[in-house]
Image 1 (tube, chains in turn purple, brown):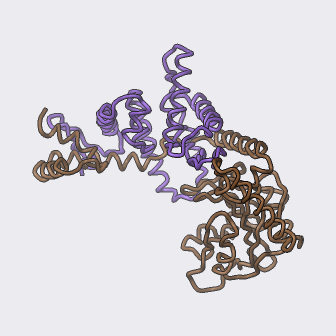
Image 2 (cartoon, chains in turn orange, brown):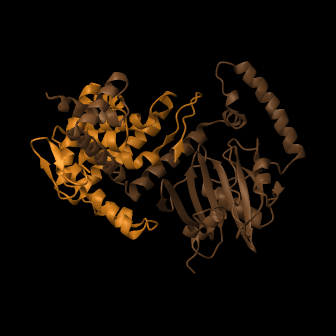
Image 3 (cartoon, chains in turn brown, cyan):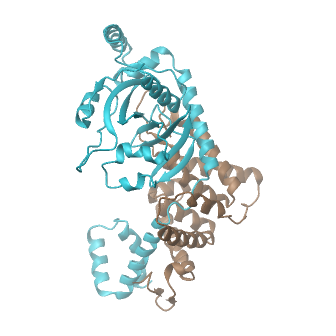
Length: 198
Length: 292
């Protein structure tokens, strides 16, 4: 699903289908509500389609799309003048989506889904700022500089926030089967478990 | 702050290959001497791997994909409708003509191109088959039906992938190479030949495969003009396949590396079987064979 603006120069190609999982994930991290997330992604795509002719050839399309989505969400928050909804995620639709993929080995798929589910549960327990930086850096692989520009903060802030987010996430995962059954050594701050400290 | 705290902050930068020079040497030297920091680094590495394995964090629901696909299709159509014939021709004959700062040179080139195009159309009427259709699937099906009915002559008749690949050189605005059999044995689907068709003003490649009385066509066009969407979506790795039945034919469409593909067949088995056209000589062929 690629589109290229028709404004004369050689602009970057936009493949919305390829970005859709990432945009939807970010929308869910921001809104924590499936219906709201879907609306955010759809609105983002519509605005991107309308604005793509203004896109510079050297633009980072992915970062641009994520910034659009974030701005829409922030505007909606301002308009509502309320705190973000804290509706818990219903993961059944995610599981249903994965279930249609019959090409994977069933056992490998089960283990992978279980592990993924535990990671998602742990991420959902993180504070908003940590969820956001984990998604942008670890899942969408945006650079520290791109994230800093999106969040309008110094690169150093992004790096320290990411370090704290990872530390908190690791603590949360210690309580699940993902990281094994070890404990954290409070004196050193290191985990004493097979998976994280093999 | 202890020295270990300082190195702990550098662990992420180390994993991201963002430590250099003396800083990198110091970090490595400290790792050699400090088992706690080695364990901490491994812990960070394990967490990164775990997070990467769980990508994507969430999958977009099919309904959302369909809505976005429809919006893209609508936008694509409106862009096409806005272009006048002049702009469309500029688009066809190449980006070199689209230089806005050289209008006189552009008009000369356009006039020359019109003359050449007229000559080509006068003497080689079947050089490019213009198929009028609203979307990519419709074009693929209409073309397939034209071939079955004997209304579309092949530009080249050959069962050689190399010959057909070579024939397309310079005829389509993209480069591709047909997969060649690397194993022995007789292929199930035999390449029969190829032709050119026009899709939204741009040449597209039509490949015909045969198996006894069955005919399968594969239409390949640039993803810039050919939008792939709709149907039953099945993800396989990074690719999204769209399965549907159209006018009694099975159609599978997908996009990859800037090209859009539409495979049209009347194969009676599963739609997946038609994928054997390309995968019959590949290591993953068993993934596409029928269970029957």
